Image (cartoon, rainbow, N blue to C red; front, side):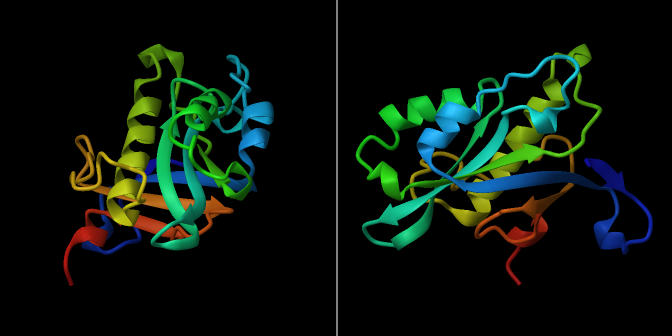
Length: 181
């Protein structure tokens, strides 16, 4: 659940905006295209719809057999729609049998509504993607690698990863994780 944490923590952790992500996977690209196209309706919660962020793992000529290749978002189109594009573009030269996908849905956020034309949802998905690309530097991501994560008007962001998160840490914190120790 996204919220501001203001009590029970040290000064360092106060006023942190928390976004929880529920991950599922590993999935094959054909499974995502076939089974993850639920657009939802007003009675659905976001976590039951097929929108969010995702990780793509597979072989890389330099880095190895099962590495994080790409982090992306499917906020205005379903995972299914997004991966149809990836199959024909980003992944067209890859052995698709060796590609594994992890889908992340933002958890239990009743504040995401049509009232603000889903702006908060799009913002939070963008934050998650930006933080993850900056921290994990997937080789297929060209943009956002060198760009400091866009945190919008928040000073501190906490990402909490639940479920099958693959190689992501259980939590990511911006900007704390990026400062040299």
